[in-house]
Amino acid sequence: MSTFSRSVSEPGQVPQRARRTREYREWMLFVLLLGPNLLLFSIFTYWPLAYNFYLSFVRWNFLRPTKPFVGLDNYLRTFSDTQFWTIVLNTFTFTVCSVGLTLLLGLGVALLINQPLRYRNVARAVVFSPVIMSGAVVAVVWSYIFDPRYGLMNELLKLIGQRSPDWLSDPFWAMPAVIIVYVWKNMGYAVVIYLAGLQGIPRELYDAARVDGAGPWDRFWNVTLPGLSPVAFFLSVTSILACFQSFDIIKVLTNGGPANATNVLIFHLYELGFVKYDAGEAGVVAMVLFGIMLVLTIIQLRYLEQRVTYG
Amino acid sequence: MATTDYETLARPVETVRVRRRITGPKIAGYAAMFFAVIMIGLPVYWTLIGAFKLSNEIYRIPPTWFPQAPTVDNFVRAWNVAPFGRYYLNSFITTTLGALAEVILAVSSAYALAYLRFPRKQLVFLILLAALMVPVEITIVPNYLTIARFGWINTYQGIIVPGAAIAFGTFLLRQAFMALPYEVIEAARVDGAGHIRILLSIVVPMAQPAIATMALLSAVGKWNEFLWPLIVTNTSAMRTLPIGIYWLRNSEGVINWGVVMAGSLFLIIPVMIIFLFLQRYIVEGIAAGAVKG
Figure 1 (cartoon, one colour):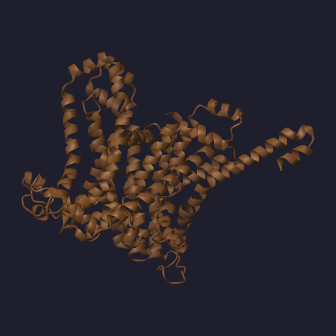
Figure 2: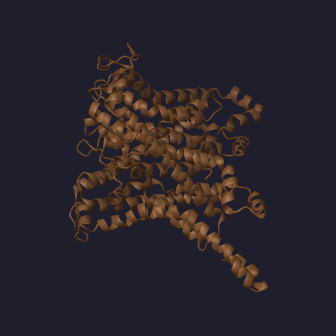
Figure 3: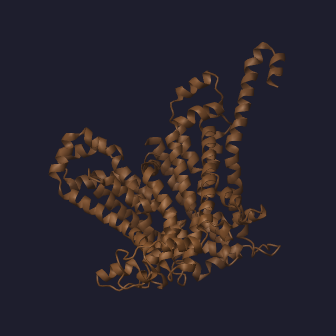
């Protein structure tokens, strides 16, 4: 069609029309390249979000042909349920302990091996390796390690004269067990990110501090820590997000038990949807999780944007 | 991080000074390395010896630190108790196709966002990025209903398609594409190359490291995926490896740890082999995503 319009148009209009056609074709290509991605997101991300919102206002068990509107009933039911608040508290405990331990242990290891040591890269690789293992298989392996009679933990505790608790069936010890596994699996991620952050601190700052007469402790306190703070901030946000999404370890290791001791929000959502078939309450829990994670993700994206712009 | 060693080489004087003066921190460094390696390695070692022990040795108190009669019986038994051949096939198919879809979508979307004109392009970019704020975990119930309506429950497309769209990879590749030297692309355009040609023969080869890292991380993610395949499969024949090992533990755990550990190794070994060869790309890719942006 472009050739035809070109042949009849006046000479002065030719470049403009050609440009317009080219622009139009560029738009088409843009739609073609980006369309599939956006279409998939619409069907499998945005639509589910809207649908969860809708489900949170109806009563439905996945089978009944009708979904009667019940107003805020699902919300009231959820928020007046003591079990829900136990689960919120569990999520909080799990997240704070896991993230805190991962970040602190990771920082310690990263600081100590950030020296010209031999086999440093080997150590880094070993520490990182659990990060890319499947959470399910890690939990399976640890369920043997936590075996109160024949497990590795029992052996190690015997070395220091302690008896092993029945980790996974004891309402008190189940949560620490989950946290131990989480920290074991994810510490390497923190180490790698911290090491990258340490590399990013300009050497001149250390030289300048040394010239000014700062000792090792001063240099650590006034150069290393401030230099690491953006990385630590990024790590804490991503780790908190990862904790909220941590399903596989809990499902395999404890199945949320014993007696809800390790039931967290994401596991609760799964149970409501696929064990208890309560679509309405599942919708409420999904909206709660979404709200929490939305705030965290916005903070994380702000950080990334800043890095991209000024880093 | 790989540059550290070269950096140290480039500053011999300082290295010497560091080596001579501070021995305390270095000893602490080696101690930390040793401690960290043992902490990570011991559970893996425990898995390994468990897989090679006979039942009567596993259930002996105190346990042995070296298998006294190493045997491959557990591997044979695990392979026969659960259809691991089928699990491998399912995991291979869903990982390859899933990662491939993500890479293709990320590359094409990133090119469109970096180089093509479109009205309100920033808004389109924001709509795509907004997907990052909706974690997949909260979509499971509606997505299950959608997949059921498509008749895709217990199929490969049911496992793969809902997770095929990609926002973060698009974001990272867009950054990588925009960092490419614009003169090269402009020169190709002057020579008459169209957008598809520029994408395939200039942008993709030049951004290869970034794309490879993204592909690798995407594949690892798909290989390990647990929640969605658990929900969307309902027969043993369609299970992927992580779901298979979960069911194997449920049926054989406690009573037969050796078999379960052997099954676990079926899962861990392929990933570890890949990691052994490509760890630099994986580790540096992850670090770069966080620190360099």
